[in-house]
Image 1 (cartoon, rainbow over the protein chains, first blue to last red):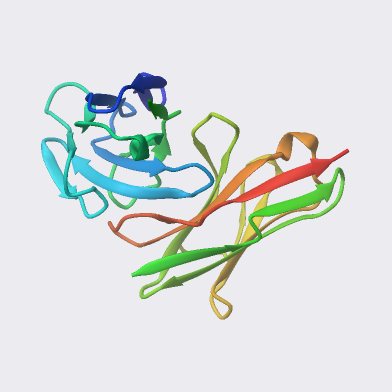
Image 2: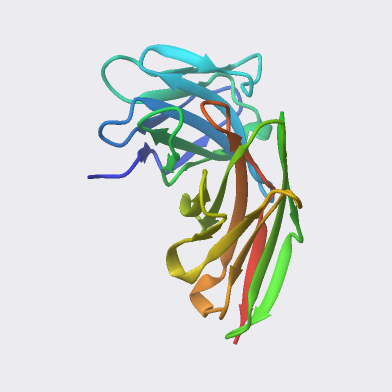
Length: 113
Length: 113
């Protein structure tokens, strides 16, 4: 059973471009969580999704950030008009239910030039 | 609301010495508690978790943690440090059921030969 997959592993964007980060949860997991890790900091919760639904987006910045988890395909975290402060590692986690432990992917490291 | 405090952002131990990483939490309801390890440029791997039942929890790689409700602590220990234990360790808390996981800021463990 493959683990949580994230791609790309590394992403470089120039200021003003869009970044799309993909997350394929473990097989059988319908709950997906996105976290951001800034340098020298812990993980900060961004958003929690179930298939086609956003359950909790209390950690998402109000502007430029959006997330989806369509019925088919991976979950996508989209950052529009990136700025240097968006440079961070973005981790996706999945679980089979809300009450279960979360399994983490290897992360996508976004660098904004 | 919940929070996690990890005392000591950096801990150094000699190879073979006891490892003790401290974690205190606050939670308005009985918590689920986790320790994760992160190696450089990798995702988080679950070391161990406490949900209910026995308060002394054993995890992978010889680590264990004890849930002490009276002290609101969940310290991580290992009797004898190995060079391969050098990594960053994160304590995390969430109430039972769904609520977002809250992570501590992490403790970097250095093992000195």
